[in-house]
Image 1 (cartoon, rainbow, N blue to C red):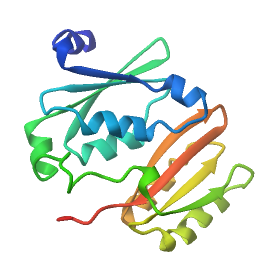
Image 2 (cartoon, rainbow, N blue to C red; image 1 turned 90 degrees about the vertical axis):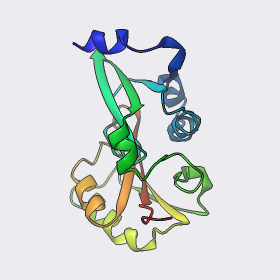
Image 3 (cartoon, one colour; image 1 turned 60 degrees about the vertical axis):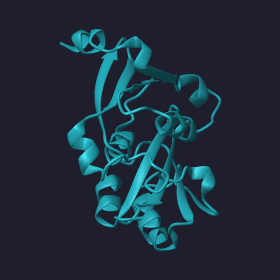
Image 4 (cartoon, rainbow, N blue to C red; image 1 turned 45 degrees about the horizontal axis):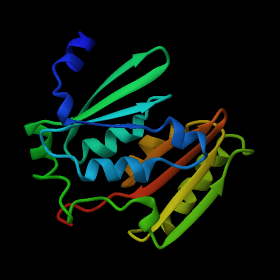
Length: 185
């Protein structure tokens, strides 16, 4: 039962972040999320509150050793990220050490932006796939779109890239595309 999951948590070990006010200002909450995750202890839980389900974030944090439990209630998503021993091993030990931590979008030297809000399919995907060759360890691609490009994520995954999607407002999404880090970095 979902409420049993929440009842079983130690309230002193929960770090909560409600990203709805951040998104309402038009700012991307990714850096705020990653800052909270970076200081999270292995036995703590990160509680993210959002107005939509942040599906790409599941993959990003999953690679850092986190499982998640999503509870939707009255149109609000409460997502609890927590470490399990299995996930931590899959992520190569303590996933949040300095060597293994991902850069936040603000730490990249170059940003390529594509505004696909007025484009019709398949133009947005074509433009993104063409631009991927320019995305490297120092460069990210920011895609502005009128919807979440769910069909794009598997294509990015196949090519060694990851994406974070944020709903800015109705019919406005900001997708940050980054090259995945190589194993052992």
